[in-house]
Image (cartoon, helix red, strand yellow):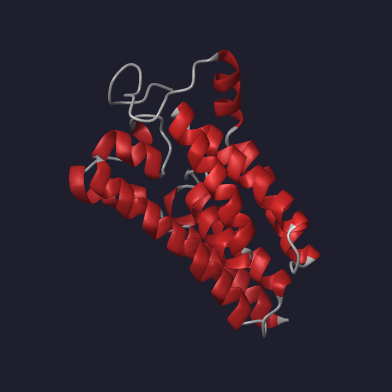
Length: 207
């Protein structure tokens, strides 16, 4: 019992490493959470720091999710429940990071890493549809929500996946919708920022 709990705690601590905050501080000497959308993630990094740092943040956040699932598997003798909850813990760490006053991102890149590790084919199918939606609409938030909403559906449709993976993906979906609640309201009003657009009002965020 100790090792599975340790896996979940370690995954949360790993998830709490906010690469966008660290890179923004190193490159520009700023707190990225005070600029653009105020989100500590790859999309806001693209807006504030440019493509290179944004790609780095995206990849590192995905790797966090992958690593968390493997930590769960290694420390639990392959339990899918522990792997799923370790992935969820990493996403929780990204969203509410211990090291950065519990102010983090929205967890989509880390969720991609988690879901690709737990259920690669369902995540791939959902990811293709999500990417197409982003290409067509330029709304990253919409594509993110489509990804987390469709992954549990494909897990149910495609054979070979346990209910523990399904329930884990459903919790991840609920996390994402909660973190994107302001984006959902903006999408409904047609006020959501599109990919490539600058944040209205310039660089520093006004709260």
